[in-house]
Each structure stands twice: as structure tokens, then as C-alpha cells.
Length: 429
Ligand SMILES: [Zn+2]
Ligand SMILES: [Zn+2]
Image 1 (cartoon, rainbow, N blue to C red):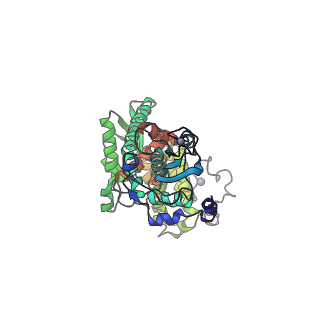
Image 2: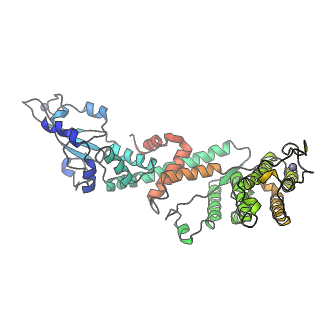
Image 3: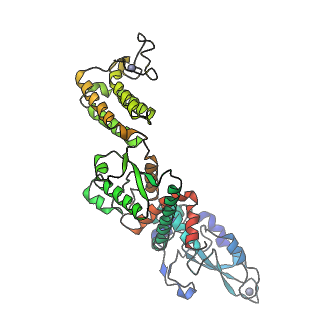
């Protein structure tokens, strides 16, 4: 009992073990049927374990005489990843047989379930083996050998990928079922792994722009092969994306990108026109445009007409302004621009000319600004991928990345219950 009492002093010792690294041995002699990475040879009463109480409770009888076993009679422990086999001696002095007691379930003759679970949990949390082990040693739980984790991940990857593909097929079917016509309306936005990625050709060109239309085209092609026609596509209004898509597809801009591009062009102009440099000016102009575009989503002509009034308004000519958003008409003497410097209109022929040109550009492609979709869901999905496979960590080029992206797909399609779906796919753990 003395040895257990010293435990409090050494509560946190797995950090040290982790540095030494676990010992790898052939475990066939332990009748577990596979080579496994064994954890540390620290005594069983050190640190913490993740235990399935139900499994443990039902195994606490002597294999030979059936007497109740006691945890205090543990003679030895062999750790398999996050689980262990405990060697417990029978308390009956006549028997003294040593029974082998597992701390968790093993399904279908594979390894301990917890070791697959911990691997899925690792993917779900966007961690890699070393992060997981930093976490475990922080809790003073024996770390899991990184090669064990990679091995489990390799086994799980095809399962996750297959499940994600199945769930995408299902989502396509549902989408078509609830769409009004026989063609799908989709949105597209590319997300990029900064370092080597599944789309490794990207990292060599150094530019992602050229890849986007190719990706959009091949996605549309693949959907077509499955019998789904994309009729309308909301995408970045990048010219290359638009020109390389099949002609039959109606191209639509999306709100986020319209806004981004407009701001970008105005900030570009601000290099030469210092009136635009004042903090509130560009956001105000962007708001004027976006308000007009949003207000006239259903009518091209009224959108065009109102877009044409914005620049004159900003330059103090309110003849065409609609009283719904310009208060000049109500009381011209008291009118001030709240968001322009000193409450005054912008001025200067050159700037006026540039802004007219800009407005004209939007007027000309008003039909693409109608019924704007949003690629916001694409962006949120791209963010989700980034949390499963953080760009600053290297999961590139391998099945690991594909499994991590598939996990993000599963989470989007199935919600947070995706983990249990994988478990039913895999077996019954
Ligand atoms: Zn016994
Ligand atoms: Zn006005």
C-alpha cells in the first residue's frame, strides 16, 4: 500500500514518459492477435486511464473460480493505446489464479474500440498525433504511440471517405427533390490548403485563380455523370471562372463577392484620390451600391435606374434620387452627408469620371446581379475544412487530408452526429 500513497507526489509523470517514447513489442504471446504498440512500463497505479466501467465491472471475476477480483490486486498492466489489459490475481488463497481483465470493448476481433474512437476524435478536433499526445500527457493519461494512431487513421480513412461520398449522393437526391425545376442551382467557391494539398498541382503554380474554373467544371461534369444537371451557378465573378464554364449554365454573381470586388476597386482608386481615403467614405459608397442591388433583386430595369443615381447623389446632384433613401428632397437646406467628410459631397471631375465608369460597369451587368445567391455557405464549409485540417499543419498530399476533408463533408451533411454514423459504418462500436 505504501507505493500507492506516494502517488500524489508524482501525479504528473507521463510527460516524461512521452519524451522517452513508448516501447514497441510483439504481443502475440499475450493472445491479442496482433502486433501493437505498447505504452509505458510505468506501474499501473500511475496516472489516469480511460476505462469503460461497464466492461470492467463485468470482467471482475476470477476466470478460474469466479471469485470477485479487486483492483488493488492488480499485478501488472499492459497498455494498448488508450486501453489496457490488467493482470489481476484471485483473492482466494486456494486459487491465486491471475486473470486477464480488459478495460474496454473490442469489436469484431479488431483492436480496442477506444483506439478507433480516439483516432476519429483526433480528426474531429482537427488535431494530429502529436497534438493529441500533448493533450493526453497534459491530463496525465498515457500517450498513444503516433504510429498506432496513423495505422488506425489509415484503416478509418476509406470508411470516412466512403461515408462522405454516400452522404453527398443522398444530399444531391434531396436537393433535386426539393428544387422547383429539374436543374440544380449551385454555388461555388474554392478553398485552398496553403501547403501541399490533395490538389497538389495548385501549390506549384503558386496561383489558385487558374484552378478554380477547372474545379468548377469538373464538379459540374461529375454531377452530370450522376444524372444531375446544374442550371444556375453562383460563383466569384472572376472572369476566368465565368468564361470557361459550359455555356448552358446561367452564371450568377454572389453577394459576398460583389461586395468584396466593389470594395477592392474603390480601395484601388483611393491610391490616386485622397477623398476616398477618409475612413467612412468607401464603406458608404459600398453600402449605397449594395443597398440598391439588394433592393431591386427582382427587377433589372429598376436596379439599373437606381444604380445610375448613386454617383450623382454622392457628388451632390439629387435630381434623380429616390426619397426612400435620400433625404435631400425632403429638406434641401438641412441636408448633410452623414458619412462623407464635413458632411459635404465628393468633388472633382477626374474622380467623378472614375466612379461613373465603375457604376456603368455594374449597370451593364445588372442581369447577373439579379437574384444574387450567396456563396456564404461555401465559405463556411471551407472554414469547416480548415478546422478539420488546419492549414498551418501538414496533412497534405495523403489519404489523411482526404479523410479530413471527408469528415468536414460529413459534418456539413449529417451534423454533429456524423461520428456515430461513421461508427455504424465501421462496425458496432
Ligand atoms: Zn480464483
Ligand atoms: Zn441624393
